[in-house]
Image (tube, rainbow, N blue to C red; front, side, top):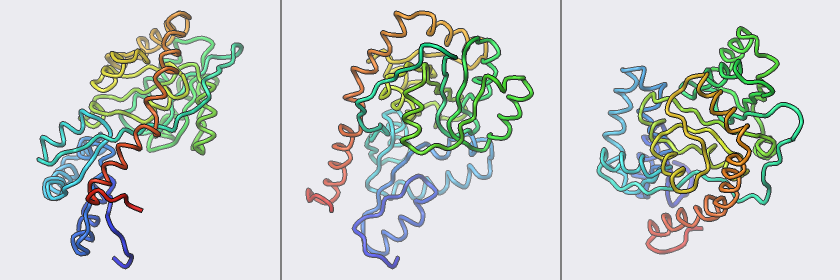
Length: 293
């Protein structure tokens, strides 16, 4: 309220109310940046009263915002349908990296998950799958609501020698860890449409590092796989099946190298240098063709 500005960008639904109100009072545009389908994340879906409240907020404020974008085509299509305003797509992709993965040939094979340790991310399945894998370690980079519960599960299953909790890492440290991984994981459960329509930033982090990964067979990941062949897709979350998929990819060196090479070839297109051009164009159009400071 007490600063000069030309535009307010409200990131996710919980900042849209104040963002829109202040922009309206100041006569400035408000942009809605939807990192996720807020009313469809597991933490909201399983709480009917909370979900009702945020649906009311979304239904009132989002149609009043003229400019909006989100992280993937499926979410953009769904939100455009729901709220009657056009959503652009700005994907959450990393900067182009000159480095490619160099996993060590000796020692355990590193299976990496990076991100929040929260509900609906298949982490219990990933830990349980380690019971069926030999010469492998699961590295979990991040913390979250399930941090203690997952540590307890690891202890209960006797897997403390096969599961490592790395905690929060600085971005550069995380990139270095990712380069050591043999396989990346992105295991969203279908608990609400937010995860089903997701296009996670970790997906592109694995591609950028040249790391083959296991992803869910959800629409956005299926589209990337059909176009570029950079994953192994799984239809559901079963520890034995996940372990079988991971072991199969580790054992099939030809297929592993093919996926890795596909990642290296396409990462020049799936990078922030390319995506930033779309974001700058989005804001230039709001400012009537003038480039914002």
